[in-house]
Amino acid sequence: MDTVLITGTTSGIGEAFAKKFVLEGYNVILVARNQEKLSLQAQKLGANKNVKYITCDLNDENAINIIEQSLKEWNLTVDILINNAGFNECGLFHETSINRELEMVQVHISSLIKLTKVLLKEMLKNNYGHIVNIGSTGSFIASPSDAVYSATKSFILSFTNALAGELQGTGVKATIICPGATNTKFAIKAGIEKTKLFGVAVMSANQVVDSVYCKLLRGKRVIIPGWYNRIMVACSKILPVSVLNKVTLWMMQ
Ligand SMILES: NC(=O)c1ccc[n+]([C@@H]2O[C@H](COP(=O)([O-])OP(=O)(O)OC[C@H]3O[C@@H](n4cnc5c(N)ncnc54)[C@H](OP(=O)(O)O)[C@@H]3O)[C@@H](O)[C@H]2O)c1
Figure 1: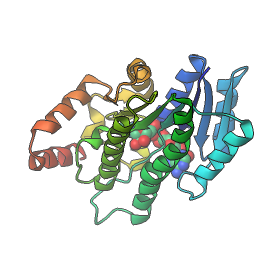
Figure 2: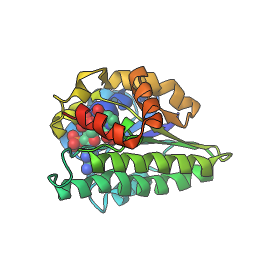
Figure 3: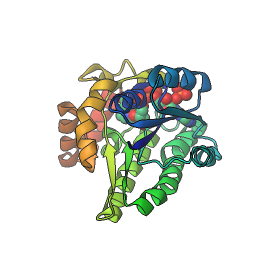
Figure 4: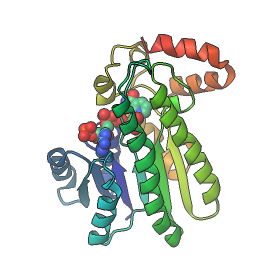
């Protein structure tokens, strides 16, 4: 059975993905930074099943070496990589924490491309594999009061689309999943749980995973879970940026 490595599994969408893949019989490798939570999660998921975990902080320069090392020790090849770990630092750019924003660039961009490069090489040798990145509806919408977050997610969209183009005919696929507001710890951590964005059509993490799972396995390139999110993204492609700016600012209140 295929092996799936998922980053950011200790809550939210990553946790829901881990449950789903274990249930479907995959070998699952959990990656997050809280050893206690990971160990508990692996025990809960893995009684008699093939669940392993790697503790590392993706903000740490050495994180990808730690992951590589563990895979070597276990002699395991990853067939599906889900780059899911992420967080948000919201607010007007001149007021937000530069350290948190640089951390976001590290976790959403640097770690994601490093881990993808390492695991993709193995996948290409096997002519088989799938790189799955978690973007956001913000991948399509430059968001005032969420400027760095939406820019990192926009990077992920561009990167995934380009990669998917390179990988055609290789047996390796690339997919980006772009959720909208989802009921996880994400909004609470960012202090945006009371905004209008999180007041309408909020999906649960399980709904996100259930609605994308089959499309993911089929290798669809861009997946937007939820009709409301698909309409938002479609509108973002027609409306002028100045109008979108106003709508986004209003939704972030
Ligand atoms: N929730 C939404 O509304 C929403 C919408 C669009 C896109 N997304 C994207 O979906 C993905 C998952 O978010 P979520 O909603 O499931 O949030 P979540 O419940 O806060 O889960 C995020 C996961 O990422 C882990 N993580 C964060 N920073 C990390 C680091 N430096 N190293 C290792 N692991 C780290 C967290 O671990 P800790 O517990 O240790 O922090 C946690 O396991 C993110 O990429 C997010 O941008 C979320």
